Image 1 (tube, one colour):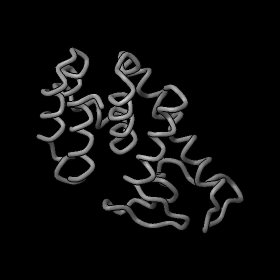
Image 2: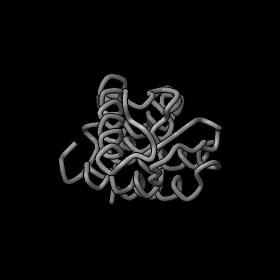
Image 3: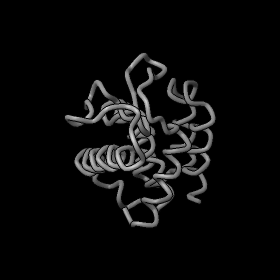
Length: 148
């Protein structure tokens, strides 16, 4: 992902996930900190304590995004052929859902790969995920549809 596009994705994730310096339980009761960092999946590095500082929050986010990009490259290698906006949509969804749940969007992903972006957006909105993250899903579907 280009550096400029990455900065836009980071800003979007900070808005969508929020930024928390202390641990909280997400909507599913999972301990979380920073920008949607799942502490069950990846505990804090040794010696880190809450509240975190900005450097620590940014470090967790950078590490989580590296994992997301690795997952996308491994599971959906065509994702990098999408335009910048649609790359951010897919990365945002992978960040929020995790790669396993994202791969469950089989028809939606097939539509994306085929360039059928209206169908992909419709598939995104016709999901349990969309009912959970309402505003985020609407915005991401609109980005997928328009590519802008």
